[in-house]
Length: 586
Image 1 (tube, rainbow, N blue to C red):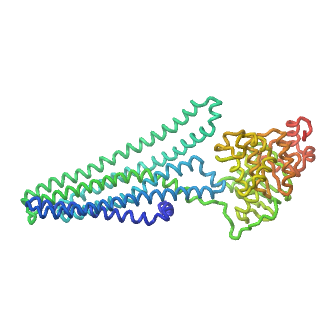
Image 2 (image 1 turned 90 degrees about the vertical axis):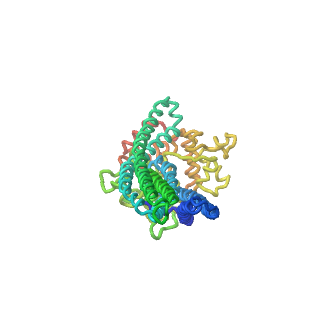
Image 3 (image 1 turned 180 degrees about the horizontal axis):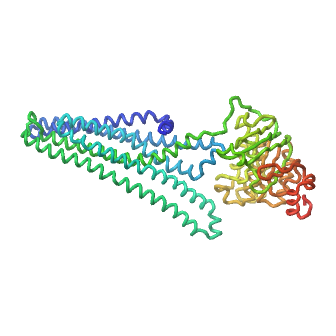
């Protein structure tokens, strides 16, 4: 886990290495200062020698200034390195998510990814900055302070060794108990973010159904769960303080008692035993050891919190896309001909269980330039079928070929550039209408944009807006209607000028007249493009060259409109129920 995260340090390695070096210098100066103070007392103040007082005062000032320099540099470099590390982590996670296939994305909720990009990375950044300075400072300080203390009086200093096992067992037990709690806390943060995200995006539905109180209760329930878990962890972590204080002040009491006894016995004679200056330095070193123990105690808390975050971040960084380029990919899609050759497909890890097949034994040949309609009830796997074409998912068995080449043999970017897919759930991004449309083609001219919008019947409502194509679209297209959103998404797909155009129930929110206009326009505007239209409307597909009737992941029937009317009970029932015996093209 640590090795994976350290890969995101990259250009901040220099600062990450220099920070502990400056910390070491700071600690060394801090250890020397009490020794100089001991000499100042024993050789200057006690005998009343002002020359010695002045000399050691100059030494003391110089070491303090150097210590200050090391301290400032270590703080500055540590902050720079940790901020850069967090920046790289965010970029790495975001880039990793962008590379995911649909099946990878299915493993992580949107709220969970957002939590990992924000709360979890903030925790890791804080832990990294803290550890760069203090994880080195605390052991060095304690080690050096003990070494010098042993040099001054080994008998008194040995007393500290009695407290180490007590400290190690206490802090280790606290960490072991709190880690699982913090792991649950961050999982609950995912749930909280999910509730907030759903509520904000669906605020109009909440208001229209007057469900604000219900949503508030749902939020409070998750928030209270986080509060209880966090409080439980903090109560356990509170034992850090008494464990550390018992260790530290126990050591100080022993120093006081043994030190005073030694001074009385020696009569403050350095040749005979402990002096006043040395006892003072021992107290300072005891204080430094106390501070080191406090830092170690805090480190245990930070590790307990950040370890859960590190695990969650690592899960994404270690998740590899299961859809990648083959060794020698094909970089040209010759035409839009599609062949489904005995295709079966399942979601998730249960692909070896045939009873869970979403698609089973699909065999279809679609010639380049043909229009194909797909009808079927909800859950009949219509969307799953078309998502195999641009390789958003890979088949479990069989193959999907475009232009005579298996889609797994194409360069992924080349394949997806040749396929325009307007998903069932249309998405627009915050920005102008023009910026959204140019997702389909960054080099599109204004004339091409307007032509695509006319074909998608989007030009009328765009021209009616004051800012026309510069009209700002809110996140998710919240400030336009569902039908307008669908028409913009169709126009965006058309600008791509694809070899294959897939409309996955993409005209459900427009009226039948507009739908008919769009279908007719597609046939004339892009005659060489293979068009696949998934719809619940017979009128949207009745003029297609081929119509597929799907049920339970299988193709129940296939043919033209007239053929299916005669032999397909499902199709004829849909036709009668929707058009009530009227002409299809009315």
